[in-house]
Length: 454
Ligand SMILES: Cc1cc2nc3c(=O)[nH]c(=O)nc-3n(C[C@H](O)[C@H](O)[C@H](O)COP(=O)(O)OP(=O)(O)OC[C@H]3O[C@@H](n4cnc5c(N)ncnc54)[C@H](O)[C@@H]3O)c2cc1C
Image (tube, rainbow, N blue to C red):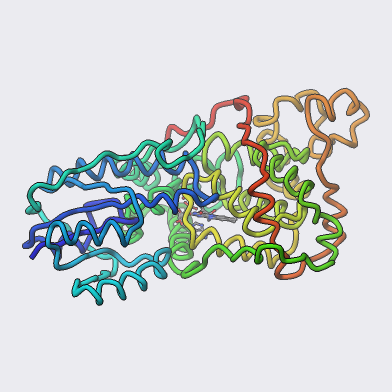
């Protein structure tokens, strides 16, 4: 039979049961790049750059098995329909993916109507030694970011894509870095090394969660010391929350066009669209005037990654202090992350939206007591004394700094805190905010290099 193997967020040849299942068929391995997906404001050039590297690597791996990857740009159903007719495909195989559950339902109905088999397999082991390719399939180019209308997105410390890079990270984590994981992931200057940094690879599927878990089990079987055992236990729990905690979460829908926002404390404090636009632009630029927040924003702009505590803080500040909608705040944050995974991201945004506002000054006291992280990313605060680093507006020398080399705070964090917990759902200002958002400005170069040589 002629079988189309559709690669989505599973860009690997190992641990891919669809490849194993098609070992005796003639196969067409395919990746579809959907411009509508990449037009989503949660998507960005850094994410595409990572993914394009993964696709190139997958193409080489599949070519080594005998059937190189075809890449097509377009709406999935249109692309599938065209290719299935052209190459007399009888079956489409892909892996289950909670992020694509709604699309798969629609495709199942379409496939049933055309007599095609559309089979989604559970992730698991399996990889053939060789594949039989369908003849005369043009591989097609991997499109550049500009073909997807993605803005230029400089991310000097972005993690590189591709399975070998993921394998190297996993190896260095299990050989050395992982020993400090349990506590180190919450210590900002350690977190870059002590966290696994596997998230972009798990999001693109260059590594499967199952193979990472198996590698952890093998490491534990070597009977490492107590630090290792504790850290690997915590790491396993993190992996499990990524697999189960987020099933089905999606970006919340925007308010209907023209819907009038109800009068509550949040709209009174924050609701003017021009104010919201300005705040969103400050979030993109890392210029909110709240030092710990800006340091985190600039670290994210430069590396495409942040530890979970800082992601939670940014989400909380964007939602609770700046009064942005869940969609606008969530998209701004997601676009800065190379590892964007919609189910995990939107579940986390919801959790933060329903939680208590985070106080950035207090969190800085706990996570960055000496201010080293803040100073690394905000060289313009070099002369501010330690005692007021997180609140330079309390510094007697602030006059020559604020509003000149560093912005005045956009909001008074204590006012937002005093307003208490926000309502569970606030009206959306997404449309106005996104349409009118100022062009992105990238943060200036960091004062010190990130330790990305993992
Ligand atoms: C507002 C917000 C948005 C987030 N958006 C994303 C996202 O788009 N993509 C993403 O992969 N993670 C997201 N996370 C979860 C978490 O911050 C990242 O998974 C983690 O920081 C990635 O770094 P790491 O691979 O070194 O993680 P490690 O701590 O080494 O964990 C290993 C893996 O476990 C999973 N994991 C770890 N923590 C969590 C968690 N809290 N929830 C779910 N899975 C977890 C991830 O797959 C991660 O790669 C978000 C968290 C918050 C608070």
